[in-house]
Image (cartoon, rainbow, N blue to C red; front, side, top):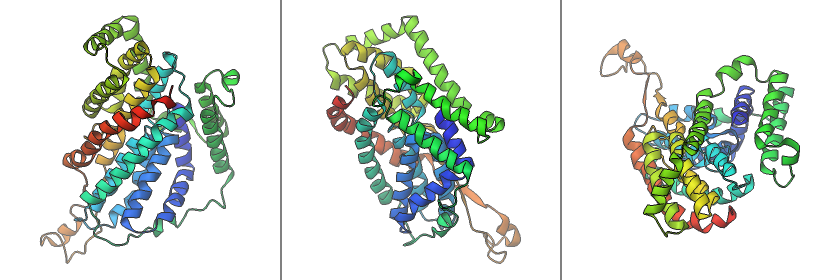
Length: 397
């Protein structure tokens, strides 16, 4: 996970991420619906490889020029900001390094002996992510229809070109590609005999970036999200303490007694509903820290640890009904609308020059917007996990 943050920091610092993002958005043109889909696909794709924390920040910076050109009463601004949050939340389920909660879940899979590979995780999560992403896109366009027929997207593409990459950018790209390939082909290339653990592979880009000056001491201390890293470490320590103190067995025994004789589907849906509720109010990462140890223990008992752990953490990523539910939600909630300056003669409510200086920015989203979109996606994710998710568990086992 530290490697993911390091890669994301270097790609953003060297301008590779913005360059890559603008090229990906170019084919979507200037129609609002296509631009929204492009930004959502971009957020999902970037979350897969550099984690949804830096990805959501980058997507907001990319969409800000588009938001600024919209009129104050244009609801499409809400669609763009919510689209960034939703796509990065859904993108956070696609790989074991895509979000903090997936890192925690992947650790528990290894701890209970359920060796889930990078590719098998993706095969299980991508169909669910794709379905929910398309539904979210249609929902946003329905709830927040654009007023403009065309958007000005020229500024996003003006300074982007892969033809004149400098040496630092080339090193950053090659290192990122090699690291991701090692993670994705871990079992196929038998890399465990070489590195011992996937975490050791993550040290390679960090050492290389620091050695070549791509990641300096200031960047390592300030640009990496150490609060999230410490939270993950604390969560794993908490799970270990729960296991050693037999609290985990007590909690697991109570749940097993309540659902005695039930099958995998019943346990999946029960924990998915718990995740949906707790993840919305406690944040997805904290919910994963608290609930996944119990899920892992019960999964091991019923003989389906990987299916239960991964399905629950995917539902965790779909909990997005409140601004506090996840980092992408909180990041989007902080986005403000920077209004175009008015002339002194126009003013604001007849206040002349003072009115021209007033209220240069304002909030875009409210809690109601999250409930009306993220809440619906959370509810829709439950039947999706109960059908498509349940039918796909053989991919993991």
